[in-house]
Length: 158
Image (cartoon, rainbow, N blue to C red; front, side, top):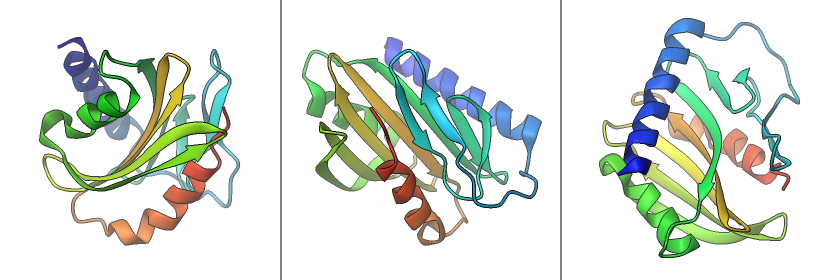
């Protein structure tokens, strides 16, 4: 229940950030990074996206990205990642396991509960799950963003 409340708060914060910042200005290739400094985790934001704060970025009005962490649930890493992928009625379109920085990881492509696409990466980091989520709003072509999103995922440092 606590996770659902926290995730709801995150969605409200992301929406509010989009309302406040709107479309990003001109931005060429960047090396801006989202980071969780207390864990030493960082990743480049996608090309052309704007860094809003250390853990959030956006592109235009309908695309947002976040980098977060939380304790791994009782069922373990895989179970926690699967539950997080299905929160709020999202549907898992595809997922695969990999490693990032020597840590077990899962990359999932989701359909959001209100349409749109989500690329989510989960990384097992000790007793924590570090996750990055990129929401591409409904009506935006996911394929247009996919390569840049995957470059960001591959840039993750732990």
